[in-house]
Image (cartoon, rainbow, N blue to C red; front, side, top):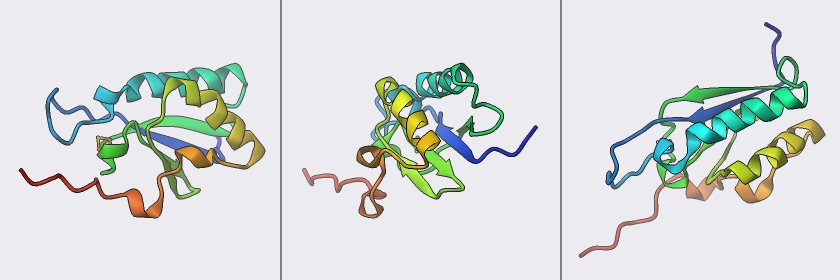
Length: 115
Ligand code: FES
């Protein structure tokens, strides 16, 4: 298989319903992964531009579904199915979808209010 320009690691970690950390799978990441694969396939980009892979937890659970874009070195957060075409179009243009990029100061979850 050829080396792709980008690898999209979609976290598909699943925690039980009700877990306070939540998880990407319970937020819909498995469907996002499937949609990325389908969109790349439709556009004929699977073997050159990008491969959509899955990953375990990458520890930005509060922003799930999360995608680590490598080797570019940024994460997308709160990704929905509606975002998938825009994400692929941005890769094609050599840009990124800024509104989805997890900021450097947003890797920690917000503090939990004390009871
Ligand atoms: S469960 Fe996806 S980043 Fe932790």
